[in-house]
Length: 223
Picture 1 (cartoon, rainbow, N blue to C red):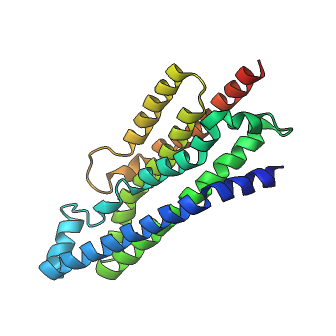
Picture 2: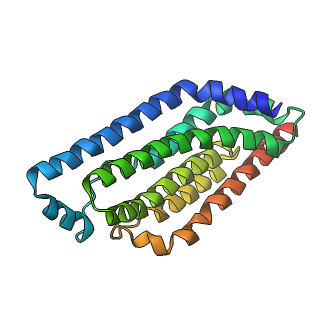
Picture 3: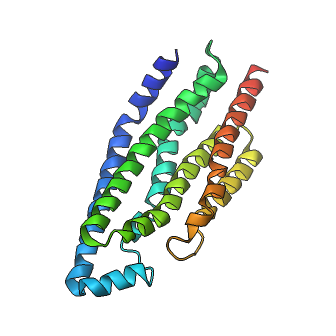
């Protein structure tokens, strides 16, 4: 049954996922072109100084890409389920509700991780091609919080959509936005490295929170 649910989710998000993946490839290509343009206009030493010492972001196009991908995948995956309350049918299948929801979440998170992998590989390739080795650590110290914001965005939108009560839905949306905002503080590149382990804790908490409205939805419909 779980395999069937996972396959259903795969079929549902396959085409939108491919479109989103293609957009990520375009974003990476754009960063490459922008970086090449920087080196055309300035000497390499000047660009390195601006990036390593002044904190210039040559990969700024990727800043909101992870959270946009996370939100888009959550909407694509769960809006159809909430339309006409189709999720109700899944929640009343003869299978453990937690396992069933984990299958749903797993499909969406796997798609999100594929998109994040494209961004990470592209950023690593561009950085290694144009900058000294230490720039790679700085770049990923800045990009990783954005990637986690994408995961938080996905889980937050799922939490909002699954909630059957509209007032609680608004509260969930506000809470999710707050968690995402933690990863977008206006700080110099690389500063997040020291606090990132603490912020990561919010991700499993959001994941566990996603299970609660599903149980409430199931109980309400059963009653």
